[in-house]
Amino acid sequence: MPSNVEIKARVRDVARLQRLAEQAASGPPAVLEQEDTFFNVPAGRLKLRDFGDGRGELISYRRPDDDGPMQSEYFIAAVANPAALRRALAAALGVRGVVRKTRLLYLAGRTRIHIDHVQGLGDFMELEVVLAEGEDPQAARREADDLMARLQIAPADLIGCAYIDLLEQA
Image (cartoon, rainbow, N blue to C red):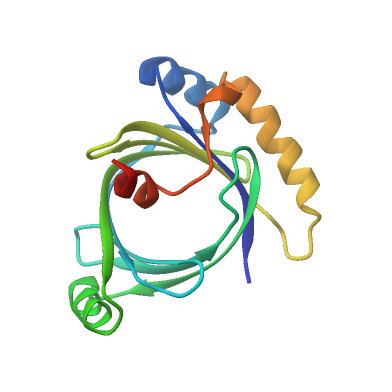
């Protein structure tokens, strides 16, 4: 199963973070509108990501809910008809909740830098350092730590849960 090392943090100054991300990235960001529908599952998380253009992705993932760099294992399947799949999964599993966000996606080597504006929650950033198969996650953790420093992410701003968890807490 593919895996990455990721961090998530609250963002207090989006403009400053965008400038720092542009310096770290290999090019300008892609702007993505995403609607993630989370379904009730016994372990991990299952979400259907709808890009709003007829394309989607079904994403299953497991990771600990810890602050700081953590390893996540995931599986992504492309979806040609997200609306129909959403109806089928909702009927079978029930909907846990929906997360709507605008995402700026920067690429810095093998790391994905996300700057997200999440409806109902505010601004966040995520780093995802993609691991090669069989790679020791410690190297990716060091990369995440280094990029956190370059992006001036304060340890106090780190969060250890998913956006859906924050929405449920709100």
